[in-house]
Amino acid sequence: MLKDNGVEVAVITARDSKAVAYRMKNLGITHFYQGQADKVVAFNDLLQKLNLSADEVAYVGDDVIDLPVMTKVGFSICCCQCT
Image (cartoon, rainbow, N blue to C red):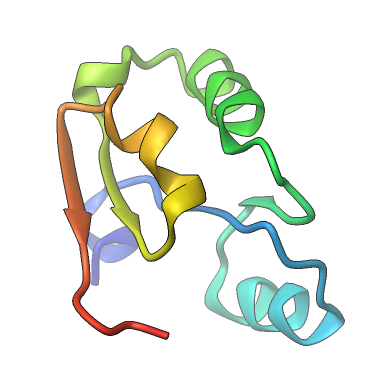
């Protein structure tokens, strides 16, 4: 629904999975970073590619390694018991 309304969707994950890559392709998510232990590096690359500032970004995290990015964005969300 986000993409249908002109919102760019990106995924940054520490995992490296062919299944997840396949799912991202099926969903049409072209901004997909996997194997990213330091998510800030991928996040900064994404900001540059999309010509965005960090405060224009909403971010959903599910682990402690998401905290460095979550503190930079305009709106961050963390789900409870999302593992």
